[in-house]
Image (cartoon, rainbow, N blue to C red; front, side, top):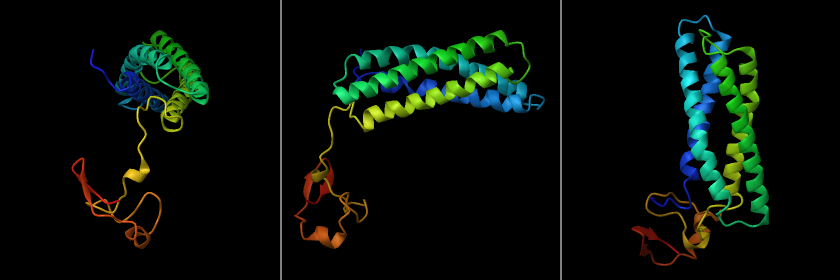
Length: 191
């Protein structure tokens, strides 16, 4: 199998987020104006997005559980990953229920039944919370990150990057610390 660093979960997570969000949005829009001339077509698109989003949950959850049990993490990271896992399971359950309601209501010409439209709100909020918590795992806790950059190893102000530095020092203050450029990774770096 092709190795993706650190695992396949980041590849899959975007499918259910996008597909299920589009499904919820289209169900809500077509429920507001079910008599609109495009409502039936958009309801069909919503159903397909919901179905494909539900299918994409399987590899997303499977690779997420694999990551949960395999990526390096500390105690705070474990708490964050566990919170992400439980909210992901809640979002998945709510969308599976929404899928069952949509299937039961599949003969409706346009829009969603009130119960489906109502259920999609907490389902979508749980999905968005899951995405936020996943991003927090990576960007706040460094989970799944194999290497953190060394900010002292790179300063801007060269090769079209603009005249700024990550440490916020003005250009005049940086010039006194500047050294001749060195070639590294195809970029000119000033230290």
